[in-house]
Length: 132
Image (tube, rainbow, N blue to C red):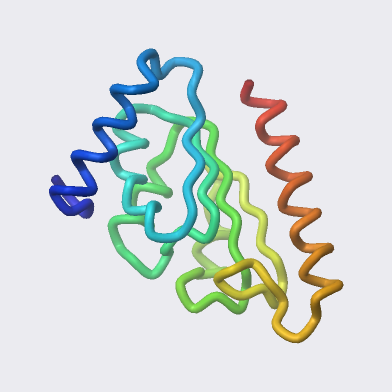
């Protein structure tokens, strides 16, 4: 089952079965569920990956191999995000929030965190508009 544990793989497969036709679907995940990236890439699913675990080799490899429309969003202060790797991806749209942590928040600055959330929302909306 690769990077997903058996239970997680069963849930992922059940979710895909539930949605039926995958040709008009978009996968949206956060953090730990980025371990589904290899499966999404294999199935050619477009995806939005919020704070993918770029410190995990299987996540990095899959993200770099993605041929479907893909958006990765992370914060430069997130220890699981790799700014150099992310900005080097040519096949993936990347939004990096300067100073944001794993929750995409800017610690100690709630107004800047709200602005960052607005940017994330706007970027996701534009991405969905292009892919849908």
